[in-house]
Amino acid sequence: MLVRNSQAQVQNCDHADLHVGHTNLVGCVFQSPRQCFRGASRPRLCESAVNFILKMEQNLSTPTFEILPIEIIDKIFSYLSPEDLARSVQYVCRKWHQITFNYSLWKNVVFKPDKSISDCEIMEFLHQVPMLRQFAPQRRVRFGHILDVLCRECPDIRSLVLDKRQRVTAQHLTKIRHHFPELQNLCAGFEENVAKACVDVISSFSHLKTLRLNTDYLNKPRAFRPIINHCQLLEHLDLGHYFPANDVSQKDIIYLLRKMKHQLVSLSVTCSELTQEIAQNLINCTKLRELSIYHIIILSDVKLSEIRHLGNLKSLSLPYLGGGRCELKQLYRPGTWPKLVKLDLTFCVFFGNEDLRDILEFSPNLEELNLYGCETITDDGLELVYKCPQLRRLNVAYCYGLTDISINYITSCSKLTYLNLQWCIFMTDFIFRSVCNKLLQITRLGNIVEQERRHQKNKPLSQFR
Picture 1 (cartoon, helix red, strand yellow):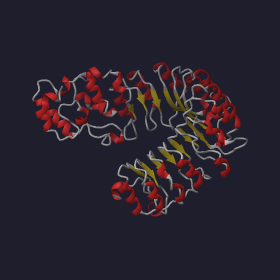
Picture 2 (picture 1 turned 90 degrees about the horizontal axis):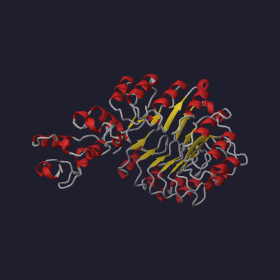
Picture 3 (picture 1 turned 135 degrees about the vertical axis):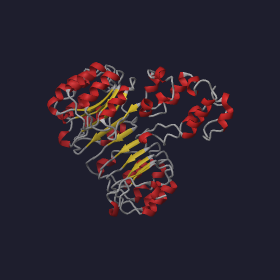
Picture 4 (picture 1 turned 60 degrees about the horizontal axis):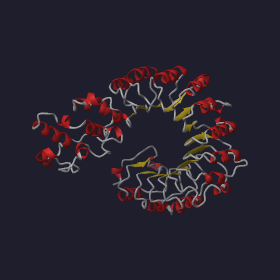
């Protein structure tokens, strides 16, 4: 192998991850995943590795990459960002054209152009990645023009996730269905005047497994039933997040749950009145792992205790949950969700310290906790956060009752990587430094804002360390 045949050159490489006698080439060629393109999770070529390769090429009749098997090159390139794959690698490796059509290389690559990339640059990029499978622009684009290029240059698209403000037409969807018959993931929005035609087209996507719709039309009776009736492989369904006035009708939710009870894995829906019948049908969804119900305000004959029977839940989101303390007390009991890793109670204004302590004490696998806007939470509520040793993300923004005492509890979470303390106005800069010094692995101390610097967001951690 390359490394074994070049021990002298290896000793000149200052990258710690390269070991003589090993084939750990990936560790040499790339830096850590944090040093990446526009904050993506893929590493970039490090300078020492590039110099190492150039030195080796001076002593080899064949360029360094050329003596490696395609499988190893493919593994190396899998660590690069989509931008690097399209624009840089072709100038580094002559075998680039041989692996361009390698399925495994593009399997997990997602192209996510943001506002820093123009529409023209997006179309230019698509010309260079014929095997791209996942396209997810982070802003509104000239979709008609880009769709033309996408259909012509990237025939193997399996996932198309558009910005929530992007609007498509039935003609767009028909074209997508024609050119991408294997499409499995679709996120799109459309205006009410074309909604019925769009729903009819979407219902003909035979391989669709994940669907998210951004439209106000879904509150109309029977609006999305064609999709439920014809998309037989659908497992993940997001019907959007709207104000209670535009929520999905109870009859349609019940119809959905009955029709998909053996296949539904995740569901996100706005439902202001969670009835006993809806709750019972939720329990019958045996594969359900992720549940998000927005704006539950009216608790007619419902007992939230019914949701406790969803013992396999890994993610539960109940943003803007209404009602009172007695209803919330029914929601959680020891051992309710032993597999729960994510809990979102955004703006659950009746959620208090006692409720939080119950959750923290009996959720050892919890990794993400969102208490944004839970105004009644104080330091006492966070005292047991140490019982969640796997906690990685914590959002306590707008929890006005938290003080520096809470930080002492939070720093017990050694795996925490994200912490949002926005408008925790009784916390001091001194305690922020304590967080950064004790939790060195935190990559984002989100939205630190006090009254005197209320317009400043994402303050650099270096200012506190």
